[in-house]
Amino acid sequence: MVTRGSSVAARTTAGPPKGAARAAESRGYEVPVEGGPRTALAERRQAGWRGRLHTTLELIRANPTGRVALKIFIGVLGAVIVTVGVALIPLPGPGWLLVIAGLGVWAVEFHWARRLLAFTRRHVNAWTRWVTSRSLPVRCALGAVGLVFVSVVVWLSLKYSLGIDLVARTLHYLATH
Image: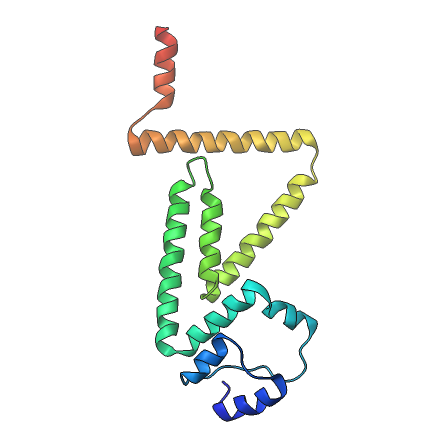
């Protein structure tokens, strides 16, 4: 951590703090200051909404109460998104996308989620590269298998959660009409 004295010394070369950093420092919080020459990558990283978000999260984490509150908030928000995503997996829609988005929310604060998200991203990219390198008939067969799998999951979900047996109703309809 940067102490107040070294923060002032480092600021003489880096310039005065701006925006949220100045407000936090005026309230007595320690604000980490990067000294020395800045690279173009560091300049680009701090620009825009990602830089503002990063700065805001660092300011929240600088306060012990804020750190705990942020962990709780990120944990609950990620859990809600993942739960909704898991509930939507058997239905047509963005179930897996929401699960991965919830994992991304958790990855802001939890290291295990960051590793799991990197693992997921790596394997989805590998699967996508493998599928796109196959011939059109193989891709069509994989699509058909995926469609059958989703259909079976939807049928089982409707049958055992809502008591609606689509296959029996369809066979009954075909037999009576």
